[in-house]
Length: 375
Image 1 (tube, rainbow, N blue to C red):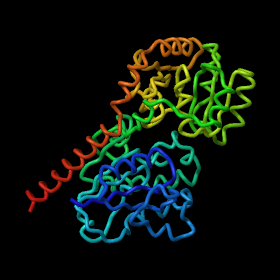
Image 2 (image 1 turned 45 degrees about the vertical axis):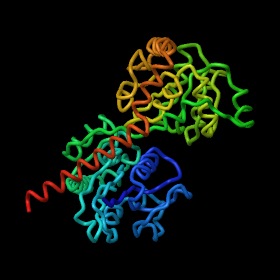
Image 3 (image 1 turned 180 degrees about the horizontal axis):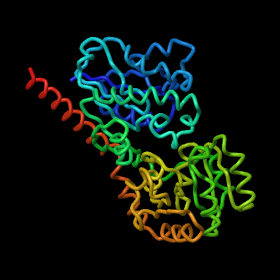
Image 4 (image 1 turned 60 degrees about the horizontal axis):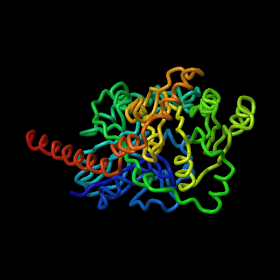
């Protein structure tokens, strides 16, 4: 069967891009379409929407109002099925030709958070965004009735799909490059110089430096456990975090800006635990940490509740008080690296490939059977 894969915009890196790359490996003969492709050579696509040929290319916020229209004016394709990887409006996709009547499936990273859950996305907090959301909710829900099947990337998102779109969905966790974190890191000379500036053991925070990631709580965890902290990443919140670190733990917080893959692996190997305060739909970084044999300290909300096993691969923190943090670090420090690795394997690329392949085949066969019965 010939298929078509659809994604939102394509960037050089990102969690949804990792899923789209995995889908491309599972279905190597499928055609690929997106709003616009700015992946710097990571992806080759068969087509972009007309937005890619306008000054709005790459300007996500400015182009939002036209995205639903762009997705409804896709070219003619020959396809037996369409699979969209959606976190905004990609599930609105409609092709011409035989693709118009092909069963459409959706792998949902989330319904558009700035429309349905603005408390989780700062883009939804403006007056213009709230006004647009009022208009877009009805349209988005109607378009979400078109797919023959929807897969959610977590139970957390599955519940959001039910509330926003009034649809049932199947949970298929996204793929994580687990095997890449099982091997020993290979830091180059520059990475080794960076590692030499760090303490022998530490609590690690790794993410973009933006407020909702709550990296200030990683610093508080270090204070509670009397341990140094390493914050790795980059972003607009860096100055605030540095000031907070100097105020709360002078000389005990170390920053590693934009670590590459090998340095990131080396940081995971050396840390006592990853501290992950952010509420994420799934959360790939905690699984990567467990693949490296390291426990995770996280909030018991969102996707981490589906990946971390309390007392076995990490610890959950409800209110992030000093006593809770100290207890969580003690629990995390005592878990087995082998138990962490075994848990991470449940979210491997191989597991994802098997599940997504079976789900697509079952959903498409079911759609064709329904058509035959109604004919």
